[in-house]
Image 1 (cartoon, one colour):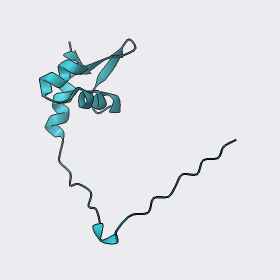
Image 2 (cartoon, one colour):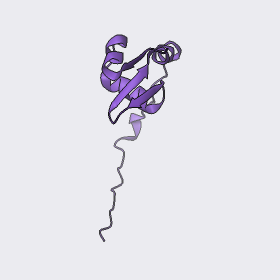
Image 3 (cartoon, one colour):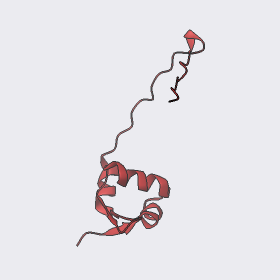
Length: 79
């Protein structure tokens, strides 16, 4: 039978935050099931496999030479 733990137990076991453990489950990056309305059980083997195969990527390069970037305002229509 698969080793399933809740979000907090998974976070403690892998030394990650509960938020990150929950996001891994909700994004589908690891195997998980929802039990009831709020409890999520995460498969520990899938978390281990995720961390064993994860690779680092280079952060996006930001071009600071162009100065301040213009932000287009959001126009909302009121009916």
